Length: 405
Image (cartoon, rainbow, N blue to C red; front, side):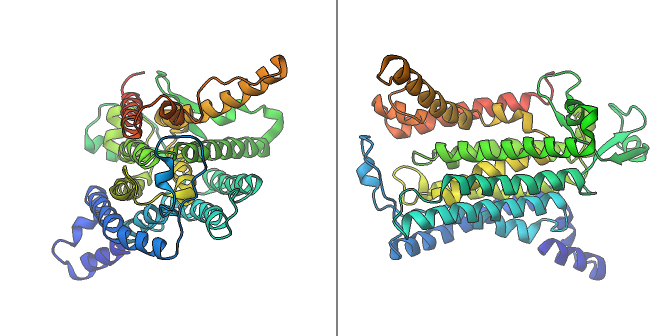
């Protein structure tokens, strides 16, 4: 909204300083500052409100050290992250941009899904929360919406140049003939000719509808998997929020270079028109997660609940899909992936050994993986810090794909 206001002031009254709002870098820094301010200042008010309403966490007895101390801690604090992300984005981003619209819709959609789950758990005292099938249906719904928009919306394009412009100067780049085309190409990390067209994976006899259905299935699977991965990761103070902030910083960098003609040409990566505005959302998202850590770091004064954890993973997935970096998710979201795999392996191995030997055995002392280290006696601050370090290493590897192929 402020973007449009200052553009009007610049065009109509030539207001000094209003031109700053045309720069993505300035608006991104302002979005990060505002989101931090909102989450830190208003976060306390939200926590006090949650305490007043007695919206506290019910802790299951898992035999973990210190878990009883967390009983009654306010939950549903994901509202802080969502508000601190949405408000700066609404104020500073171009709201007619299709990528911004998709991210706003995804944030609200997944936030509502998590909120309903938390509401059933906390208000109705139903520990099971929202039924698993309804969660999956909600995630499938947003997956279908994102898939259809990415496939059909006229503004979702990639730029194809009719001549080689590698290492060209700015004037050559601007004046080069190009065509913005619809494409289902995505980026394959560490491969020299690092583009994959989803169309090439679908047999010709299935036609256009076969391509649409296949692409929607891929998008839905990614959103569901990453969303659930973040949900499983949210088991220690600061773990999910800190890990998400680290991943979002990398996606901010990808959004900036992919949406900037000069950097895209220099790095020889896919140029995606209009994705520069995604940086505004990413900056607000990073600021919101870091600001939330003010209250969520050990010992936590508030938990994000499913209101936050389901949203975080879904937002990361949608960001990766819009930036054509979804095949990089196993690297970027390696912490989420490991947490997910630890649960799957534990369940599969337990069932297998029970069927074969009559007694179920476990690979880990407890899953998800962070609980395994708790059982081994590590303090949760050490576990969280080391998981963050692993997340940073994975993000560095992901960013290295910009040049290493």
